[in-house]
Length: 349
Image (cartoon, rainbow, N blue to C red):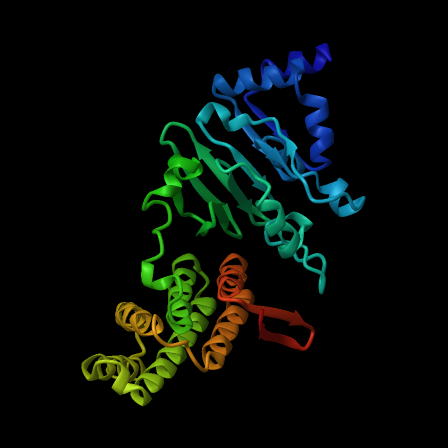
């Protein structure tokens, strides 16, 4: 132990990696080793934590072996809470986009969607989930008070039912890792009132816009733009059939956007037109909300099928967090998605 402490006291770079998070916590908590690491951190040493070690340094730690290997009930353990000094309560979840399970969902550090959503409900309200894709790093830059995403994947932040995704080379402020900022407009704009129960087609366009914001790979961007184009065409067709329920001017404008999307090949121009379509759909959604106070919405099937297609494209582009958000928002509308080897089906809850 004395030899280890002697090395640590002079180290400018310290790395800890794979293993068991609970074992790591048990062997570091309230020890001279951990105190020395904190002291080196305060004096400017670079600390690098991966996999189990990254989980262990959060305020709430995921006991992966106990749950995934031994079958314990989903729960969190108290972590080493390295970031308390920065005013952060983090639940760090590496292997966020893991696919080792094949047909078995092993995302969210082998927990899978159903189990992880259950576990999120157990976290204290001031906890921010920091999800880190594989082969990806989140670099904390203390002088600038910012985090930078590095590597092959994304960083996902989740808190209070909201989510934000950052792609490689993007940065975000330390404030976004503190739960207090999530009740304000940043980091995630609160959904407009009309979106709480608004048209599913509108929701799909907004999800596509978010995916385009966080997708750097050209082929994935093209696929998302094509899906948005198809969705706008469908909306324009529905609007033309329901012109009596919306203003003729709005309907004509939406159809003009669809035609303009047909005629342009420039990606930036397509993106501008899609942004205009978002704004128009917000207006239609507001009108729709007024109508739904007195009449129940009918024939949701085309919209749900469109969202399922969007979700499939997002998953193909490895935008799993956004795809999960579509499932969650549909569940809030009492629509359940069921995935199988044959594809995705839906039913009313």
